[in-house]
Image (cartoon, rainbow, N blue to C red; front, side):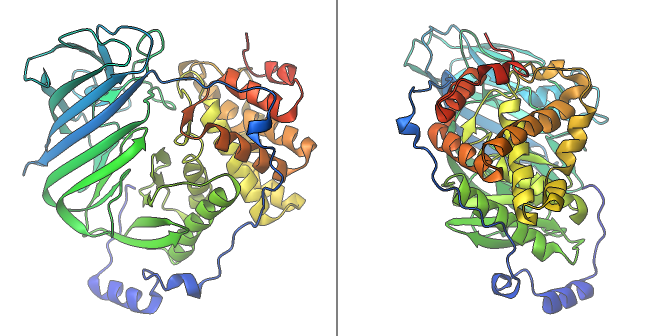
Amino acid sequence: MKTKVYFSIGVLIIFLVVGGFFMLEKESKIAEVGPEVKALDIPSTNKLSKVSETALPGSRGTYKIDIQQTEDLRFHITAEIEVTNESDDVWKDVGFYFIPNITTVENKYYMLSTPGEAEITSIKGKDGEELSYTLENTMLYVTPTTNVKPGEKTSLIVDYLLLPPINGQRLSRIDNNFYLALWYPMLGTYSDKWNLHNYYHEGEFYDTGYGDYEITYNLAREYLVASSGEDGAPKSTKSGKIEGTNIKDFYIALLDPEKWISSKVKANDTTIRYFYPYDVPVVLNQMILDAKNVFLFMEKNIGDNPTKELDVVANNSGMEYPNIVEVWIDPGRHENVLIHEIAHQWFYFMVSSDPYEESWLDESLTALMEGTYRTLKYDSSQDGEELGFREINIFAERNKVIEFANIPVTEFGSEHGPILYGKIPAILRDFFLEQGGHEETIKFLSAYFNKYKYQYVDTETFVEFFNDYYQEDHTEFFKEWLILE
């Protein structure tokens, strides 16, 4: 996003009058083009021979966060977090990711050209007592006043100052826009220890469990607000409250209303809100319908998405967050990214896994879903498959070194893309083709999704489910590209 061409008011008025595609009437004016694939005869997961156990995040957070933006555009934030110990251990400390720390002058990651500001001013218990803590790289450990036993809760209040870096990788400010990603103390997951990691630039090095959010904000100027919660009709505002239930992490975009347009369209019970810079391509209306078609396809063929609102922000990025995605502006690159990031709402958000240790479980399954969708959209002919899996095939051919997919994201190096977005989705595609074609991919992923919706899955659980689903032992197939005990 990072280039803008500003239209004059006169040109914009003509565009709105002639094009008229920011109104909901557009649904009746443009034929919707989408694959009509019915995932029928899906085996009931209740009849499988075994019951697959899911991995557990071990912790759960309830967040009340207040954002105050001052005239110098800095954010003064108070985050009150209630933490529940869902593990079997007694906690002496509580672990969070505080990722803004690696945007500061002292700690900034090497890819960041201009630092931001992030300073914790205090961490207190609910009764006001000061709590001790350590912060190193992205890892924040807070010591509560008493140990937290299994099933117990503890609360803390973090006050901090935040100014996102210019052109940051995720947490960022660009022109008069703010992209608040990974911006608050994010409760880590817990197994026999807190699963926290240093910053890593490739993929996701962080992981959080599901939680509930209440965000209030008072801003220095008016913005269009897009977020992981329900924001309502797009309009510029300076203050408000956003809520979200059972969400993995919470993203907020604050967009300059002088430079952005917004539109919305219904997809079943969900409103898709689309945000685009004023440099509007003539195909924008089709891009909005593409978002609707992908969402409808996923709901029809994979499973219901209960969200009332899905936001799409076209800011020349490709990233998924709960109930909101960032996509490319360029129409030539838009479709692939849009499909991929919306599919992540099913495989990353609603079926969750550890993206540091087992990133294939969300990235490779989502890439497989992306290729399958595009193939079925273009039809099942050879041309359709070449178009649908073109990028996956190119990535797969680049894989030269790494053999296994379930390794820490820091160990992939240059093989990150070729493995996760190429080799593994290609292997799975070929397996499902032998079992009955691309429709078999849809059937399996639907059964998998509906079994583990809003749960955590690890590699062992996936393999067990796979074997149960097909009533055959395919462990040797997986051992060719997964490390299994």
